[in-house]
Amino acid sequence: MATVKLHDKTFTIYLSEETIQQKVEELAAALNQEYEGKRPLFIAILNGSFMFAADIFKRLTIEAEICFIKLASYRGMKSTGNVITAIGLDHDLYDREVVILEDIVDTGKTLNEFLPQLHHQQPRSFAIVTLLHKSECTKYPLSIAHVGFDIPDKFVVGYGLDYDGLGRNLKEIYQLAAEA
Ligand code: IMP
Image (cartoon, rainbow, N blue to C red; front, top):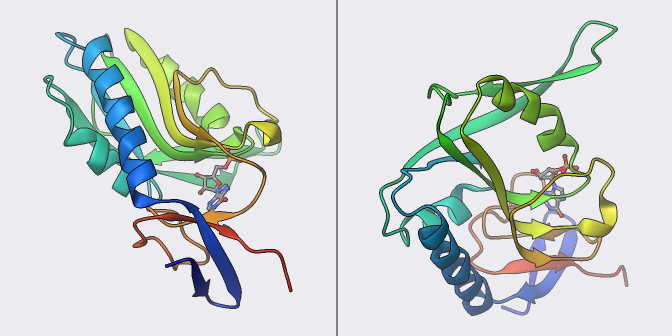
């Protein structure tokens, strides 16, 4: 499909299924090399990363574990501003080789606010892998170990990413079309 309509918006094809799967293959190959013998713990950030995480994980040939967490932002006390809590993080990260799997990093805010909680648990190593990165939107710099595609500042859907709940089931990634 060259275009899809979700709610009131039209999206045009941006990354084909084949292009995405080829990139996933490359990323998984790199992870297989880097984490051989280290039994990494992958932490996939829900909801958006479920498809990417599943595709990466089934291509791993090394011993590895995975857990899925949801980051919830709530207003903390006045001095702390927004606080991010990780729902479902039931693994002990102490001395583990931790790999975060994200679908998209935009400003970097979400991960930036969450990382101190991870570091607090003293993992042995820690890396971020994201399928998509809008690097031109960075406001909170992060050290990202692997980026699948650096994409422009346009809203995208598909392959786990949604527009107001819809589009997650698309095998391709679509970009918001310019208004006619
Ligand atoms: P950040 O905290 O600004 O890096 O935003 C990250 C989150 O914003 C992602 O996990 C997505 O949920 C959401 N997001 C940012 N850009 C897009 C997009 O183009 N499509 C769908 N979700 C997006």
